[in-house]
Amino acid sequence: MRGSAAPIIQKHWCDDQSIKRASVVVVPAFARYLRSVASAEGAEPVWAAPQGGVCVHIQRGEVIYMGVVSTETAPLEVIELLEGVSQAIAEYIGQVSELTIKENFTTILQLLSEMVDSGRAVTTDTAVLRGLVAAPSLVSRVIENVSGIGMGAERRPDVNTSATPWRAQGIRHTSNEFFVDVVERIDAIVGADGAAASFDVSGDIECKAWLSGMPDMLMTLRNAQALDDVAFHPCVRLGKWEAERRIAFVPPDGAFRLASFHASADALECALPLHVRATASASGLDNTVEFGVEAGQTGGRRIENVSLHVPLPALAYNIRVQCSAGAHTVSSTRAPQVDWTIKAIGPSDRAARLVVHYSVRSAAASADALPLPAASAASAAFIGFEVPGFSASSVKVDSLKILRESYNIYKGVRYVTKAGSFQLRF
View (tube, one colour):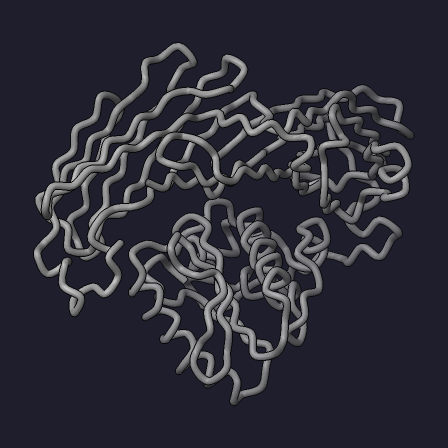
């Protein structure tokens, strides 16, 4: 679905009656629900639809991935499937948008058919999918758009049925390279004084491998004891991890996610890389909120792409904004909001300030208009940022060795910590 909740492409794995109910009743009802909330971030990921269905959705960029569930199913299982679908489509077609989805309609439909069978997830591993669905080419897209006939069936690759289905035999590269990205996300709820009421760190170990032959890799992590609830790629041999806390694996060719993890609370220090504070005041129907943002504990690294999103009451008007750094935008539509962006904040930079003045129409104080008293004033802000080179969990790649192959490889490791669900409440 596009951001406006209008469907772009649909795929069903059920009987005709269920398809009709989903298309005619559930999907339009879900679209109306999304349009009723102030922002997509405020929408419930699991929503009870009419006639007994349940809608589970995630949003990645401007595209919403939504699944309709009609039987008892774990919501996290559906969310994991939708996440795998979004990643597989992105690897096949690059940047995902309404235009690129329509240009690669046949390929995406084939991917959905292979990833799910009779409503059950089969695989979202792109290394396996490459053996089932050919990647789109310029020629195939032109012919498909002109004639409406897809070429995927004519160029269907052979299926790999070896002991390592994620890696084909006989791979050769002129340059052997292996890159690792450790991407961590901080989920936190911060009070008006900047103190964290909750703090959680999760992350992914993303890899890109262009290696010849059938290499066996051995990765050693620093502070590996901090990892908890680790989900590995099928290529990882779990026995090695459980015995030595080292990751042994035969990597797929290309990009893949080696592991997803949650950092143990016992091994974490509640150190926020970005300090955010807020002060709210009101005089009658006039309100003022002042925000202060400055660098926290980042090991001397700069914080980039800082953003602050402030939803305002639905009846807010006369919105006036002042900021000491960065740029701001004001939306006075049905869902008034203020967005503040700062390109970078250094460890020694002075605290940046944002002051938002707004008034609320008198109807906001009426119980008939808005029964919730909190709706008459802003009470939360959503923060975004990223810190290149910083690891919030202190988990780092200590060594990476290649076994069973005699050639040398070029290796690279990068770290970045981003804001996940980072909220400021005041």
